[in-house]
Amino acid sequence: MHVIIGGCGRVGAELAEWLSDSEHDVVVVDVHGEASFDRLGSGFNGDTVTGDITDEDALLKAGLERADALVAVTNSDNANLMGVQIARELYDVEHTVARLFNLQRESSYRKMGIHYVSGTRLVAKAILNELHAGTFPQHVAFGDSDVEVVEMAVTREGHGMTVAELEESGYVRIAAYRRGLRVRIPRLDDRLRERDLLVVAARKGVHRKLRGIVTNPLTQAHTERART
Image (cartoon, one colour):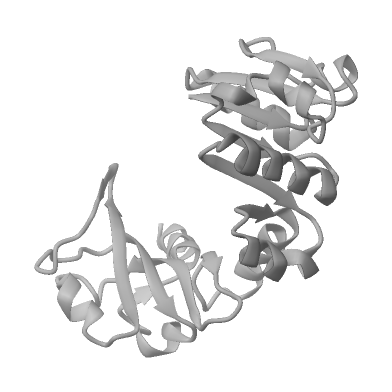
């Protein structure tokens, strides 16, 4: 996959290294040139282009015409949006993601169909996960809905329950579960075991409905350490 990354700050540099390690064809574009490219580790085997991701010529030098994906992670919302729009609307790049700082723009991005990631919201979710130990670690929340994607751990009381039995309440749908090192997409007749880690779509407040059957994985790990 040919991936263009706009912006070589900490996020852009780390993402470039990950993708490079996975043997993708990576090109990093940054207006500050070598001063930013120095963040790339010695193992990075992609290419770099000095330029602005709002500059079509710079993106063409990075291989925009053959790009499978463009990720815009500069420190400017306007630059990120423009870079994504050039890629999507002028060159039909299939996968585009923009970094978003100003949360007031979220509704506009959704209406435009722009895929985005908000560092501010991710940090806030991480902090809330730490503060609300009784709830479940959150992956995704839909601002206009009471549904969220969370992690749950099966307790001793939930051991032996089937997926269908857990879902029949109407409050959760299990997307996948991890048992040891294996991750599976569940069947309705699968029986859950204590310490299984579930990734589910759930209604807010579900921790009160399923108390005793599932718990916060972090809380469970702390309890198990205390027992030993």
